[in-house]
Amino acid sequence: MNLAIIGASGNVGRKTLEILEKSKLPIKKLYLVASSKSAGKIIKFRNEDIKIEKLETFDFSKAKITIFAAGSLIAKDWVPKAAKKTLVIDNSSFFRMQKDVPLVVPEVNGEALRKHNNIIANPNCSTIQMVLALKPLHDEYRIKRVIVSTYQAVSGAGKSSMDELLEQTKQYLDGKKIISKNFTKQIAFNLIPHIDNFDKGGYTKEELKMTNETKKILDEKINVTATCVRVPIKTGHSESINIEFENSFNFDNIIKILKDAPGCKLIDEQKDGGYITPLEAEGEYTTFISRLRKDNSNINAINLWVVSDNLLKGAALNTVQIVETLMKNS
Image 1 (tube, rainbow, N blue to C red):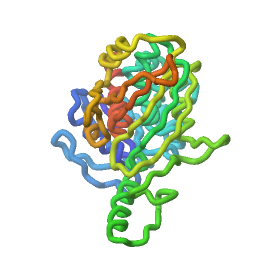
Image 2: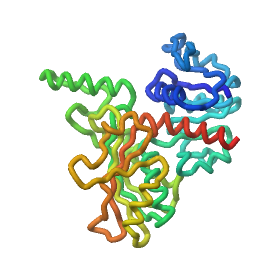
Image 3: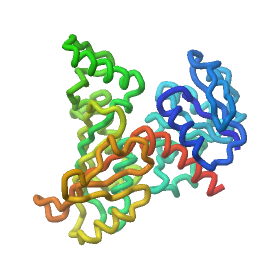
């Protein structure tokens, strides 16, 4: 098949290329597309030099599937145009909550790919890793409520934010004054309980994405409340999740379910270092679950810690897995 990547020079675009390089997908022709700023640059893929094309002049009919990794502003204008000529998988948040657009994590709701209007949405990075852990538990015990606090790496805010963390760290260690550019406050040696814009009721859009997307992917009846925090980490999102079930549960069975959860690995030794941190999750396709325990304040609830590489399973990897699932079902 012919495949195109829009936003090929960005964080997610580059990660998508890395994953495709290692995949067994039968790509006949790969088209790399970006803004005029990147157009003309050469990127090597499977021993072939590919020149980046300009978005405004790209012919979408050349690709069977087109991956958009260019943000909501680009997606808003270009995805509907592209979808008339190619099947689009969009990484942005713009189409996620539209009723006729499937929002997909293949291990969780891959069956949703059977019906679409040439637009498929990739969920929010924090939502993806959480629903991977929730899905098998919900199937067995029915989840009533989820309380999640996230600790999100700066790579989720783009390359310029990653660069700023490094710059601020140097400035702080040199005793220089720090003026934030991409963040609302200093991010080096700090954390910021604010991701995306504030909405009504005091929640941020990032927090509402986790709530609304989880409901759409898993079950509208699940109550979800989130607090999303930006932390001074380059890559890897972490989540502290409290899960309340409708009824009682067997804890040994919970352990077994999570050990068998698709796309996940349970590493939970109750000793120093017996858990996974974002540094260890970087570069890994797996979503890791640790710190599993009963909630001692609620007989029907458990706590766990979930860590995943936000640029891989949280974005690029999930997108490629959607492509693989589509090809498998075609």
